[in-house]
Image (cartoon, rainbow, N blue to C red; front, side, top):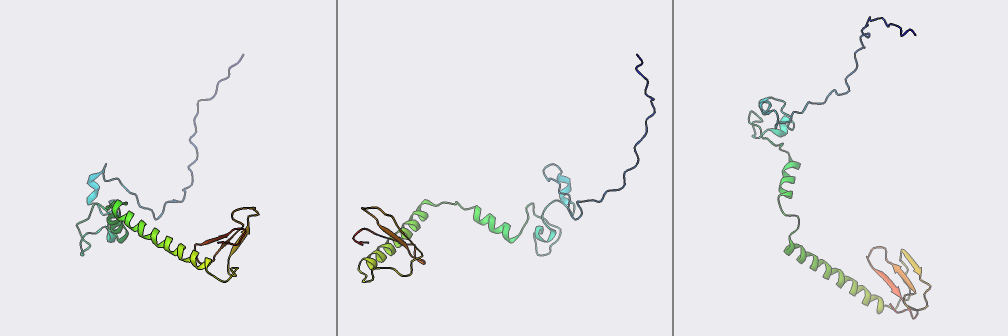
Length: 154
């Protein structure tokens, strides 16, 4: 059996045509942690020089962190605790009391109303139950659901 001999001549492939760069307009960002000597370079990977400048001169002294309105607001907002138990419970209790008062006022208005049917409801359904709630109505601009039983009591 003849294993055959392949010629040992190697050819280099033809030169590829130049490819267009798809990364035009993008900057190379270097990590300051691994390359501290790049901090003094004009392109240190921080924000835009106008945003990264510290003083009004916009000059030589640069901050390690970008300075912008959004960044400063975020620092102020997230440096505070997100939940304050005392403040939140007071605000929540006040809001809950207002909602309950609003609901009770509307319930009493509905119970003492001479109108037997709401004419501006956005939805209504008949539950077809023999006892309990027979119908429910939703008001378009108030977070109120009105329910009536078989005797049309609200």
